[in-house]
Amino acid sequence: MCLSTRAGRAVVRRIESATSRQQQPYQPLSSFSTSAPRQLRSKATPTQHSNVQPLYTLAIGSRTPSRSTTTTRIPSVQATRSFHSSQPCHEKPPKQKLAHNNEPIPTEAPRTDFSQMDMLGQTPVPSTSIDVCSHDGFQFNSGAIISNGDGALLVGGEAFAWRPWTTTNKPLVNAKGQFELTRESLGILEVIWPRPDLLIIGMGKDIRPLSPETRKMIGELGMRVDVLDTRNAASLFNLLATERGVDDVAAVLVPLGWKA
Image (cartoon, rainbow, N blue to C red; front, side):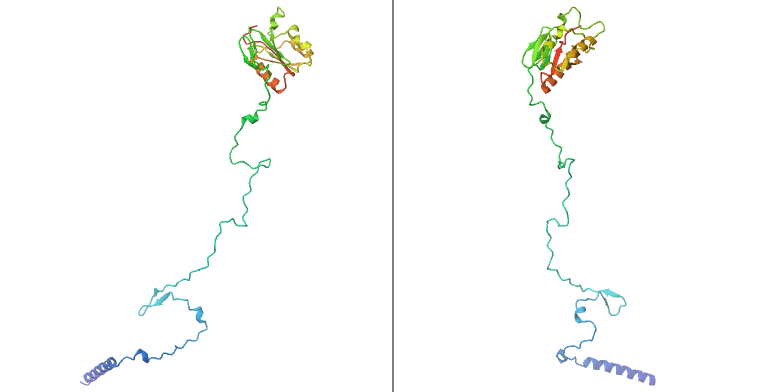
């Protein structure tokens, strides 16, 4: 009975203390002191920790730190640096490549003007230049025509009909297959002065060797000789007569239809 009485008394005391706590009135907010809170002494200045926010907070009743929901606001930078589109002064412009003659290399291939490459384009064509080599004659730039199977002798800017096979009873091609001319057939070259430096011989459709007697005779006149077929001989005469003049070159041509 004593134990139960003591236990009952203890319960009554606990109930009374709880009742007294519930009946105790709360102190109004105005009753608290409005004086400034006492500042804690610290070695750090207030400005050093004014913007510092805790990254983690320890919740009551838990042992692990929880992520704080407080976000730190970063002050905006009002003064910004302005960028310029101009080239920096420390960078140098790329060096342009030059050719071997110190001229700039073009970006595109130059267009070739063939008219500027024609050195003889402004040179007048001689009137004795041959335009057509026909089967039985020739036609010249002046409009003159040699026909009826005659050859052509061109010297000193003049054109003459030439028949070397009528000066002798021998054929122009000897028994050895060599082209042979008589002194009478080239007699006009002995009476002109100054004589041409070169004599071009056109032998018709084919090329044959020149006889030693004919080569020696032309050499005695102080002239060089070149033998070709008639077409190439006419082209060579046109080129040399235009480039060097009609006084430095002469030609004797046999028509293409001539047969030995």
